[in-house]
Image 1: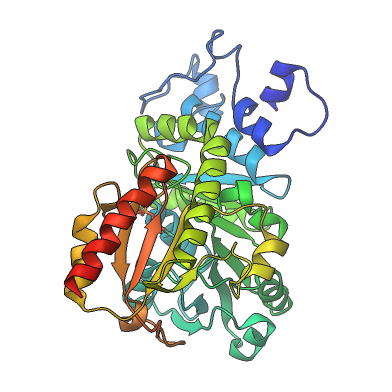
Image 2: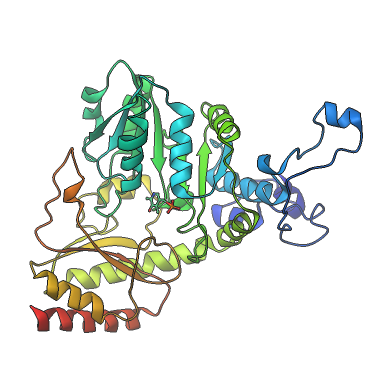
Length: 398
Ligand SMILES: *Cc1c(COP(=O)(O)O)cnc(C)c1O
């Protein structure tokens, strides 16, 4: 790897160090630390012979540039030794749909966790169905009992840990063991933890997805997705990327790499502030329940502790029953917590949510209004003061 050569290291490096050193080719970059933002379609070949042989590291802009290679090398180092390749996609959803089209065919059956990111469900129900792929949703807490849901034609299982919005923690190694015994692949949407806090490919996952729009970008300024695959599945992923023409814009690739360099310090801060904030919510009289897998009281805590090395900034809070207008008044009173979709940037966010309209394998019945918080990099005292204002507005409108 170029990074090891550049820095004269021989032994394995810790992930925080890999984030800083990998994907850097000082000689090719003419001494500069970062790669150039290569904008390019055509790559010229010096001779007819080279052209006929497709000789050279880069052949065509869609298939890769020095900028994409730098990011892919860095992500591979972060994913660890079980990663055989990383594909880049223009969004997290594009990464998920590309991975699914890569491994599925008409007549296949797919198992999807009931807590999956909603657009993932929409793709399965709206697109894969049309192409003859049948989807069954399963309880996130099913564990090895998932075996009962397998059919002759079950080709893949999609997990997400923890689940979008509701944060159930599935037992990935147990699910993966059954899937592999049945000859199926396992795809993980690992956006919440990132490979820094959850090495999916070391835990039986075949294909690990990042909505790099979130923590890898880290600054709410790009749409980006990545597909990391093990040796068994990478050839299929690489082929699908080529056949579908999936590629990402050079500025976004550069910004994803730039975000990656500070991922470890940002996540450490998100983790610490979110845990402190989660504990603060637990003690609030307005709060019924806090759903955060790194809280000792959370039902997912044991699995989180076993399989993850950290937690990030996103969790949910269920309020005691309150009228909608009071919750809206609370949201309107917040000035530091913006209301909006997506997360993973430097800023704090909140959205109200209700999974009950689309869950099919499990019932979502939280017992009160549910809010999803992203804790950003602001001063935590300022954030608490903002929430105090919000709770005062909630009380005044109840
Ligand atoms: C945001 C998100 C995605 C989709 O990423 P986009 O870049 O917005 O397409 C996928 N999965 C999870 C868990 C997400 O939070």
